[in-house]
Image 1 (cartoon, helix red, strand yellow):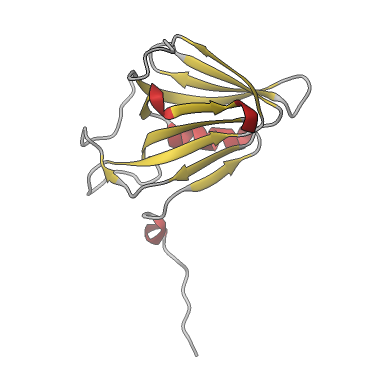
Image 2: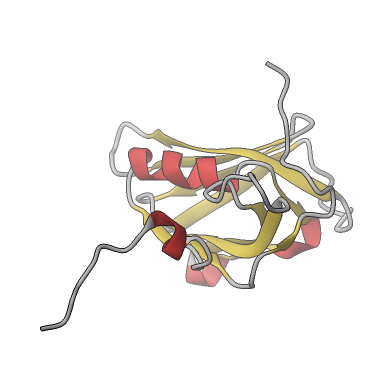
Length: 158
């Protein structure tokens, strides 16, 4: 007879994330995981014909609390489907080298649900508003974790 046991939380730590959000509650989970991600503006693209907006993020690994090891980041793709329009505020579209810091992802439902707007809130009063027929976001880690250049977790004033 083979002995079985439950997996421990620690055994799942190094696995890449692959999450899908299909409603406002799901979007809150994605938002928590991408908070403090950084990316150059050149790593965002709206494929109008495919109705998709995507960005390559350097995501802080909030799901793996920093205790005895270094703070880590991982590159991840955040893809938003069913996109009908994209608007930006507080960003210079010509400056593709600007480094952006993503603070939050928010879904605001429209009157004609499930349609609504995905708001990408950026540090420095920037924002990208993405109108969608229905929320469908995919967050997927695409590299192995690496030591965060700062060596520590991002902090926010209380």
